[in-house]
Length: 216
Length: 350
Image (tube, rainbow over all chains, first blue to last red; front, top):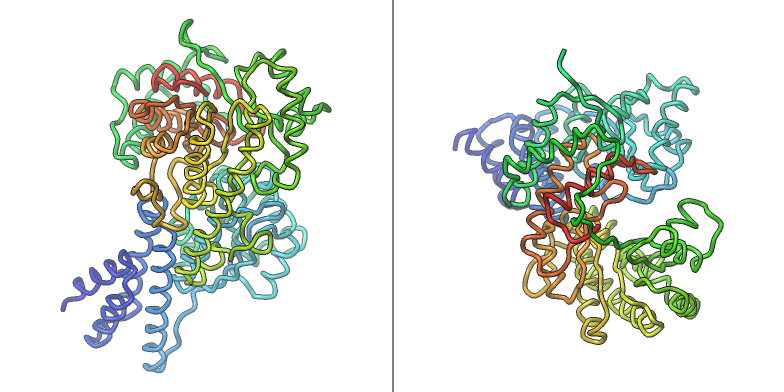
């Protein structure tokens, strides 16, 4: 079976949330001496991003998306095991602390972002919802995070994202982290205005932006 | 130098765009809606008229005489006393809407604005409705949200599907939603029945679908029961978003899967349930221009009005219907949205 066939199966397995098909595709890749990391990136990761896009259009539903994310994690574990067996260490691309800001209880979107980002080899610390800026910074320091992601769904809570930028600056921590903002009222203009490093419109874009911030 | 027109973006940012840019945004917006909803895009004539509306030199635009439509409200008695901070009680708010603002109808509601927390204070709500009905002539509906999230632990009896799903407990998450649907139906029917018996002219279920397809299922099932129980009462259902978010994914109403339905399909389910006014909602994209957002909304609205046999009112508040996400929606944007939805999409109300 060619590399292209395996990648096609990997993408299909993500669309179907089919664990058996996914594991078989990765096992075939390994058996044929292909680079499992390349298959993970070009097949499985690409596939799950497509599923995320379909979710945002109402074509795929949350249980399917979560099922796909679960299959992706199992494939990633298989890749980690294979890399370890070759005497190498699986690359953790970074750590992201993510939260819905204080006074905002909307966390469905933030949870989806966390689930998808996690599938890309990024460790995600999900602090939940209604989280004060002070706690976000405290936990970012504790987990030695690379990225701090915040979500705000209300115009009244959007300002917490600005508060985070200001507090990071006042505490001399701004250069330690990359910051990402999201949520319905957030825009690229808002990110530029407050000095955030990235804005993502949806979960699919959040994955791409998070990887870019980490240099991938 | 190319002439530029003052316009807004979905985040209320004021910017200037050229004719070509506005026309391109209109085309992109309508094509996006057509693609997502699998519905026809706007015709060239409609796009040209929308361009005229958007670039009108007037700050506020309006419909032609004879094309006026009625308005209905969600969060009715929250608007003046709570959101605007005007010290008045709910009775005064309704009277002000009737006599000073000339509203066609309004809604009595409680600050908690969900059916579940109304249960223990139902006597107070009934008294307020009776008093209002004695002093007003406009139709006064009673309204609240189905808000299925309130049925999850620790606030309610059901496991939290928003926590179960990311943990991979798909079956448990689906079962929890099905359980919440049953609780919500009982609560909506109880509260709505009490308010109808206290004189409410109609019942509004607002922000339906905010907790996903289970929220929609509970609302439609409740309206079906209520519309049979009170056949002369009107029921309005206002949606939370442009498609039913599939938190469950397999829930059906009359054999149709609810998840993923866009407004032109949502309205069919609503009218089958016994809904009298369908409040369609299309989300505003905060990054895109008014032209892009409004073209999208008009495209969805036109198809929805075309297939509906009941009146369709568009949700035109902050962040929906093309209205920018700002606490005080800008009058220039609001009036353009209203005119386009009435004159191009042919909606019955707002």
